[in-house]
Image (cartoon, rainbow, N blue to C red):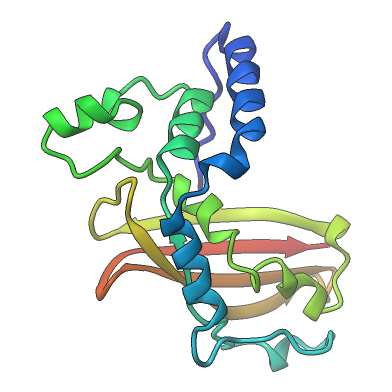
Length: 198
């Protein structure tokens, strides 16, 4: 189960200022490297395209949604660390990270969940099953790391619809998604997500 961290007292006002500044400069903060990553995603051979909605889970169990590359940007990573109250300088200060011998800011364990959501096929899984989004609960999230990740990394997320089962005569439906995360040819993590539809 994911442990939820609360912001430190007094951090919300400063966080709002950071959020406002961050969003105002969002377009300016996009680097040419991120554009290259998006271009790679748009032109990747064998890219999965969503089909017409279906209410049959059996048709999508085992579906590989294809790879999607995401650049781990420093600005959003620093903002995330500030909002959840991470005080370790390796998460927030590039100079401290470099002094510790790290190639970039250290990515917190739960941060990959947000990056995975940038995969265009992940949000569409609900509609493909004909499930109303208002009936969905986030049941569980696990992270299994093989190595650390850092700002500046280009990570490849490859989700797979791993399983579907029901309880209480179909009143509760469970959707399991597994996502491998790689950096080049090196696998860095495995994410497992459980959604519950009522």
